Image (cartoon, rainbow, N blue to C red; front, side, top):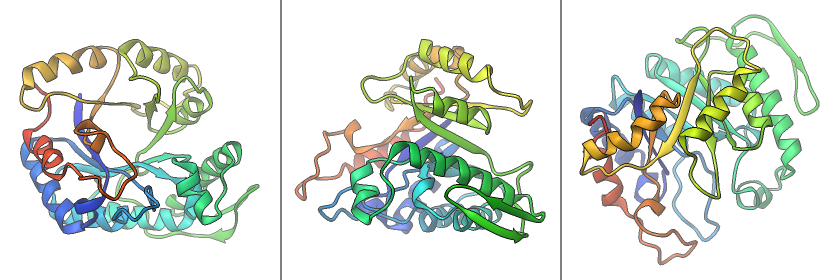
Length: 289
């Protein structure tokens, strides 16, 4: 089992310098991964939001060992070839430590509709699939062209190629029990299952892996990435929380460092972000027991 943190780069954490220091703390505390949210607006009332790729560049320069990445990047609101270039540059900067998490994006009205972007779920799913095909094709470094419903690329070679082989790992997020995202994940390197009504349990993870196994054809390692919360002041108790998920097949435990963990979030200018509480949970380290 590997352990990572996942947090929004909002408010004080919109500052890349602040996040870079927190990433140093995470590495020193023994975490295996440091992941951030990817949003462009999130709160239409004016919340500070950091650019994830600039923030991750600062994190890469400030750390040496820890895996870094987005959980998750909404690929349908990005140009796939621009993201392909950004990811390769960051993979080189971090000496091969980048993970690319992708999804169709949320909240739709704020992050897509407010900018005149595509809001239809099925259309964004098709854009996600085409975008992944394009990114993977460009990363190969060989002559590549593409003709899809949403994107068309003339023949080209994208250089340099990523440090990691066969590619930068791609983890696909999706809400369970929706099956299409799980089938999509089976074609890549990992799955980040989500559930809005109530948390996923170990049994859900077993069901997800069983379903994905029906479609997966690659023999490469596949990551089951589970997000949850553990008491940072009690690692032994935290290890007890994690154990059933590891037994169910989880390979990564991602500690949720979102604001609602500490106080209910509201789209309100008076909301006080739990900056210190978030930092303290990172410094407490992973629930290894």
